[in-house]
Amino acid sequence: MGLGSKKLGGPLLSLTATLSRLPIGRQAVWSMARRDLGMDAILALDVSDVRPYRLDWPGNKYPDNKYPDNKYPAEYEHEITDSK
Amino acid sequence: MRLPTVSDYTSAYRAGWLTPSKLMSAWKAAQRELQTELLAFISIQHEDIDLQTMASEHRYAVVKEESQRDTPGPFGGVPIGIKDEIDVVGYATTLGVPFEERSERKQVDAVCVDRLRKQGATIVGKLNMHELGLGSTGSNIHFGTARNPFDLRRVAGGSSSGTAVAVATGLCPFAIGADGGGSIRIPAGLCGVYGIKPTSGLVPETGIGPLNYSIGHIGPMASSVEDLKVALAAIAGPDGLDPKTALAPRESAFAEKCAASDLRGLEKKRIGYDPKWMSFAEAPVMTRIEAAMKLLESFGCDLVPISLPEDDVIRPVAYSVLGTELVSSQRRLFEKRGSECSAEAQLYIQMSSSILAVDYIHALRVRQQLASAVESVFHDVDLILSPTCGQTAPLYVPEMGTTGLRDDVTLKQLTRYTFLANMTGVPGISIPVGLSAEDGMPVGLQLMANHWDEATLLTAAQKIESQWPLKLARIRSRHVDVVNAIKSI
Image (tube, rainbow over all chains, first blue to last red):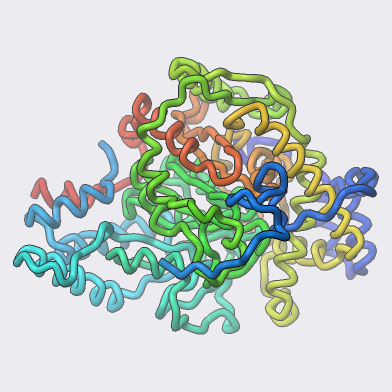
């Protein structure tokens, strides 16, 4: 089933329609986005003991927060690897 | 009929009955014909292609004379397309918008393109994409929306729409795309080809966009698993420039791992699936997914129910990260040209520009929770299974781009299974598993693996391909086999 075979709609439609007709402020947009994209739901989650996601945190990719050579980050020596 | 593979091209060149120039002449004619209907390409530079073709022809001639000085390379004379988010010498990197600010012709190839070129590939042009990578249908009011080779009334999916079409039509045995929220896997699934989003940091992003630096990944789509494998192996590995690649395993030897993947079995592999996740997919999609699950069981896999984070949590985090990174990377462009973007893009830009710093940081903390949840799941299973998309390719609706009308139901169905891999950095693959009994459109199976375990994904894809080859499914789609067309003359 594809677009057109279903009822067009959902929260973004109302948001889009509003934006296309009205000059609208930044905060107003965001308050709608919070509601329409479900941001309020995640903002309600308790993350007080959670670090923000970081790409360079080995714990996101390796067990025990160790780099692949089995060293902890503090032990890790960066080496520049030449391009192929 | 099956689509030509890399080895079909190179074997024919080595056998001598086909030359790169003969091939390219037929390829250009086929491309022109398909382009009018399917809009896979944004730009092609014929003189550049001719120069590359002459060089390939020379290298094959040299090999014939038994000189080892200049070999054709594993992709010698093979036509490869590149998404227009990735730098290619002599081409602008438009990101899917035709603005003057994006018209500078690049002097240096992106690292992934450079690696392909050094292995002999003929870069045949820049491929279409959803405007600024801002969606999953491939919609583009500037260059036209790429259509699905299985049904021209439907979209190809996005954002790497042209990449999927170039592969699905047989114009390229593999092509390169980018995936920030499903942009490789979604169009691959909707067009019936293989597509892999590698682990974050496996393929350097030097010379890319950038659109979404922390969640966008470069990867190939291909019409065979073998070509997906060789393409990924060719572009993977640290380059000393992209800091994301610093976390890649030192001993990765990724090409060797890939080459060995077909020697590994799937027996006793534990494959997790979340029944609640899957319940959102439409019935014809689930019919094919359930058939694929039975096939995997017949290979000796254990299918295990698991619990994954819900879309209601994943989606807002994904929007927060995708949007803010995009606006940050393209701020100047939006300030000058925002009003010339489609209404859909303008909405997204306005929304993303409004995200408060504290809320963005909050989203990153929830993202960390998602990463921890996925890590826990991989303590118990080797792979996570789901549909690639909850539905088949949607119909093309021109009004989407011009009025900003956006079908949120369809958007959710296309992206609900793909965001998680981008948020957590794990690799994901889309494997074609047949056609929907309802509309005859392709259905994709998504598998995700733990970080750096692309080899298991490729093994699973190869096993499924061995039972369900694509050739029968091709009968009703727009496609061309330039290699065999020349042979049969």
